[in-house]
Amino acid sequence: MPARPATRAEKTDLSYQTTSDSVAPEGVPLNRVKVGFIALTGLPKSVSEAEYLEWHATRHMPEQFTVPGIVNAQRWHSTAACRAQRAAQSDDLVDAENLVSYLLSDPVEQNLAEFQALNKRLNETGRFIEPSPFLMLGAYKLLEPRAAARTLISDQAVPWRPNLGVYLVVERLDPARAEEYDSEFRGAGVDSLLTVPGVAGVYLYGTAPGYQTSHQVDQTHRVTVAYLDSDPATVGAAVRPLLEARWKNGGVEPVFAGPFESVVQWNWQRFTEPEHVAG
Image (cartoon, rainbow, N blue to C red; front, side, top):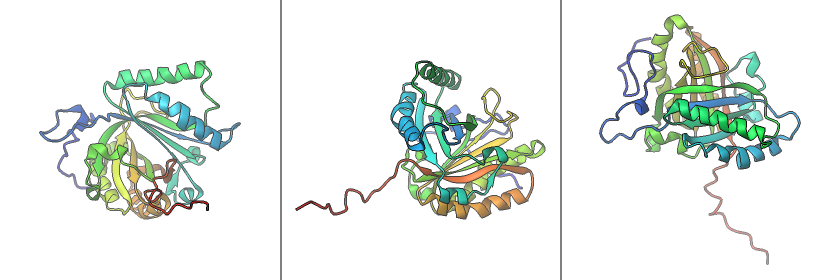
């Protein structure tokens, strides 16, 4: 794969410097997001999923924002339609039903420590219900933030734009070809996803030394979160052939790829529909 010119988010080595690590060009906002803490979980064992989702949305997730470095938090669910459009899933991720993302700013190490300390404290004080089984989780460094041109928003604003879901891709690069594929992922790989109708933006992350994950930290895992503003299952069907073509060339091992639906429904017509008043 041919190399491309470096973007403002890159360095020539694999130190994973992003826009938010450096002084932004004049007029370009800094990206507050440095790290994405991303988790795939299964279904809770002893409480209903509805009870668990209510607890997470109304009690657990709001508490995370007491950590100043948590700048964004969202949750998505894999519906039956979403599961049918999975392009890949390793054996240990077959039961993935929920996806959670917490985005952290600088100073990363301090914020990660406070994030973990908060959750330990909540657990010790009985403010956890039975947790869903974690299938994959970890802190991944932001490599490439991109917004689709049609959205008319900056790359830095993508996670805050209302979405109907996301498409998650987890891949492992061949260590011998990691630099070659890293350049491809951050260029043509992101570009191709942004051409798919319904993809509003893409945030590409990677494993890096010092950031704990449930996978081996060898700097070869890439995690792509594509934010969607169309039906996730429909977008998933369109994304699949792009990924399968990428995997066919070798050098990239798919770990997981599939759409998830937002727990929050963004219904813009809700307040414009005629109201039915009892007579």
